[in-house]
Image (cartoon, rainbow, N blue to C red; front, side):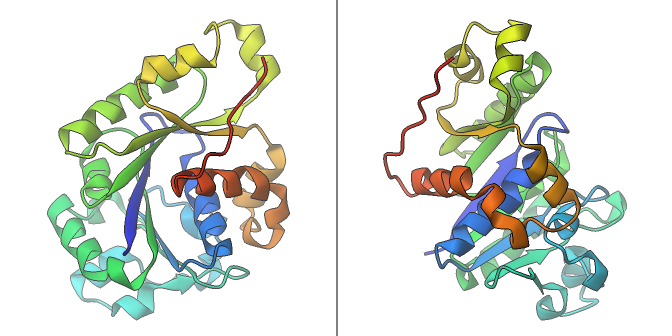
Length: 246
């Protein structure tokens, strides 16, 4: 049975798209067939991170409008067989409405083991389109007050939409920076402030960022495999420790 997971953040720049694509790659490594849908109209990024930009002709709005067939807009990620992506429209004016997106995902999700939906930052209509068909959600935050506030807003909106299977991903975590800024007493305070159970702690790694921006993440997976493979294990319900000594 297919599972739809929306990856969201209340603030831009948290690394949400990197988490979305890395999660998809980790799932494919477990022999799953995965579709990544980019819902960040006007700011799409999954095509770059998955290395399909040079081949990209059609996006999800072209499928919805009937300009092309779904197969024409599906692009398989080079270096990750079984991972497909649907790009977001390049223009924000072509944003897909929530009800249309829900119908579209429900019609096609059973062709995949997982559908990962990369939501735009914030809680606007684009976020609603991304989240409306989700079975579960991952909220991506950094350990700074504005990002945490955005995470709270996202949690509240997801709950209002009836999505209750929500987990927290703390991304770009740098222990030394966290301790030196003294914005929070410890990670428990961060987690308690958002009010969502932690499922992943992703360390700051400039290599992952550089590979993502160059579309080379799939072919250099060893750089980030351990942390995201563990995240997938937790998604599957396996007890994988998250202990961090501060």
